[in-house]
Amino acid sequence: SDVVVLAAQSMRLVSQESILEISHCCFIRGLLNAVTDDKRLRLALSKLIAEKNVHGVAELAKQAEIDEDKINALLKAINICGDYESVITKAKSICISDEMQEALDELEMLNSVLQKSAGLCDIRFDMSLHGEEDYYNGIVFCGYVKGLPFRVLSGGRYDALLKRLGKECGALGFALYLDELQLMFENEAAKGE
Image (cartoon, rainbow, N blue to C red; front, side, top):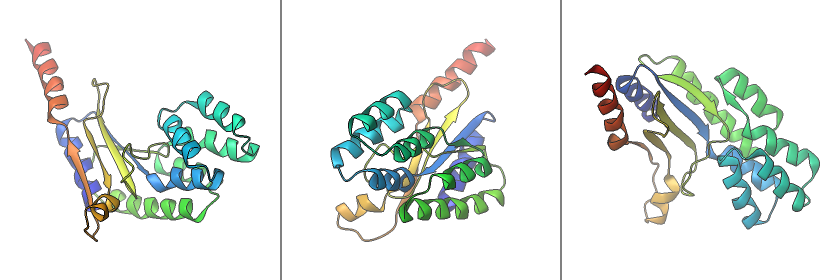
């Protein structure tokens, strides 16, 4: 959680108008595991959820003859974002597996730490965010700055990557994309001239 606090503080230092979106990749992963055993279908649905493609998820799930209640849970998950209290309430309403509940419990602990921390950027939770890389296995987060159409920070827990490399230890980190930030600073400088 210290790394997430550092990421939120870093974003605040970059810009007063910045936001850190936080999620837990095991929430969507747990939902998909509860919905289907078909690995290819889970992968396709995961991609559509990351794109927030409601129509694509609905169509693919119907083609795969997924139960209507599970389709509704998938569609709701795409739109669960905002402040912690509203997100956690909506997420609990579609929680159908232990994996999903464990993810929510971890987010609750993280939120408790964030509430006690100072100098943070705006925080938003987005349950459809689940990490673009398959090695993420916990908290994931992305940072955005007003005026830039892409993320300038991304990170998360990636113990699974280290395990692939033969290391048995926890890993949580983030990258701040300086090339993208340079565009922001150049735009601000141009406006000032």
